[in-house]
Image 1: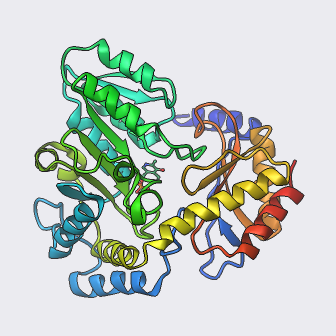
Image 2: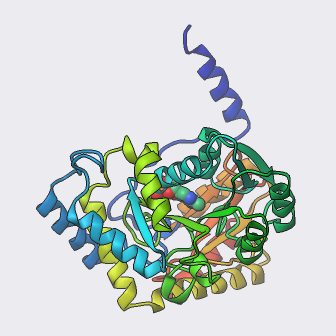
Length: 375
Ligand SMILES: Cc1ncc(COP(=O)(O)O)c(C=O)c1O
């Protein structure tokens, strides 16, 4: 049978406790949510929702075409200008997702004959960008600037070092200053994915690159998603104008993809303006993460110290992680569950997100449930 092998693979996955299933989320779910990436609690903020609604009313349900044909509205331009200004970049280019932004940035910045140095803990979208790029890929140890420096030293042509700023599995931050120094030593570009840093790290949530003093540098490119702190959907590349112009001409996920839906543009713009007005939201997300971590440790759980808003709790095995997450859910708490192949080191975890709008009582309740249900 043509697809019989699929059943065999599914069996292997099931036996290893690695099967995945979809679960629809109810609009009025009673669960306490520590699973979403809505770090600033903005996805349902009235101003963000109204931004989406107003944009859809004005521009319609979809962008109607690729950005280079009919898919660029005035609103796209507004969002790009305001994102660039907020993050301190010369220019910005918005994509239909963070995934597409990463594919675009890695492939367009690593032509034939170039070297890509990639952190072993990078997000799947950066890894896929490396797979699609024409350059040669060298994977280096996680958060290891010395290994990156050595790898860059082996190559004479153009090179780019690619890293998450905050790693999605453990929530640890990349050593950005040391990575930038390694790049500069070898005339290489630095490309960082700030999906988990934008809105959380840096002054008023301006992101990890801004916090590291790298914003606006002519050798640094930042990608991010609009689907986490900004409570919307979409992705962005921020960097020198020459890089953005190059992406418009060379990035296949920009050229051959329908523009970001107006509603998502409107929601992201509203979230950005809200964050500018209420910069304390970023610091609050970080404080909630620290509080959550402290309480988890006090409860005897194996939690990783967070550098942003992701808090990871290690589980003994994929099977126990799945059961633990299910038990949390049964007790009213939604948590993420990361297992291989989503975790490069093979260690399964519960993944908690510290939303800025969590109250102290909610944090306390979450820790109690996680502790009570531990395997
Ligand atoms: C580090 C990182 N980069 C990129 C993405 C992809 O962004 P998007 O969901 O907007 O495609 C994600 C997850 O969503 C992520 O965690």
